[in-house]
Amino acid sequence: MGCVWQELAGEGWRQRAVPAGKVLAGGEIGLEEVRFWGLGQEAVLLIGAGVWARVNGEPVLGGVRVLAHKDEVVVAGARLYFSSEAMPVVATYRLAPGGRAPTCPVCRGPIREGMQAVQCPGCGRWFHQADATEGRPGKPCWTYAPTCRFCAHPTSFAVEAAWKPGREESDV
Image (cartoon, rainbow, N blue to C red; front, side, top):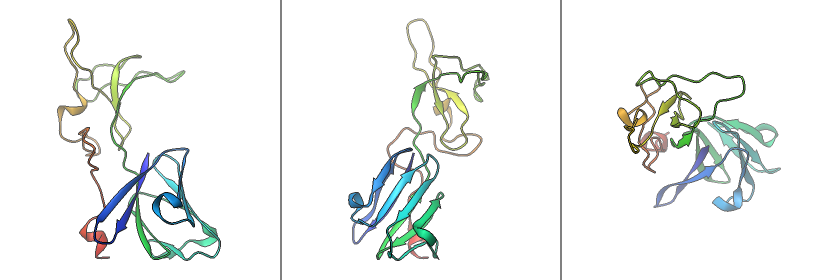
């Protein structure tokens, strides 16, 4: 799931989720002529006819553009950024039909059907993340280090995003 960051005068940046398979309507961010359709790590920007819009300084031809992480969108005088960053979530692992169980990169143990695990939002690798239960020790493999050892995505479950528009984006 990605998100759109909107710059608000005097207030800084506000984040709005763009869930996969759903549409973030422009009315929700004060721009009726804009829609964001979530595709997971990407989103499609849909612009109304006759509306002036640019992505990374280039015009949006035909009113449609696929957005990638950190793309700047300027439309109707508003400034937005798209982020493909997703937050890590503990989930019950389900093996895909015909697939094979992954190996946790921290403890090197197999991640089996029904185990509590986290799929890294950055690289897609699976890690154990199970609390201790009666007679079984916990497996906090995802939170073992501050970042994923493969892609450096933060392993924190905090609500705070790892990337958000900052000074370098505002000065461009």
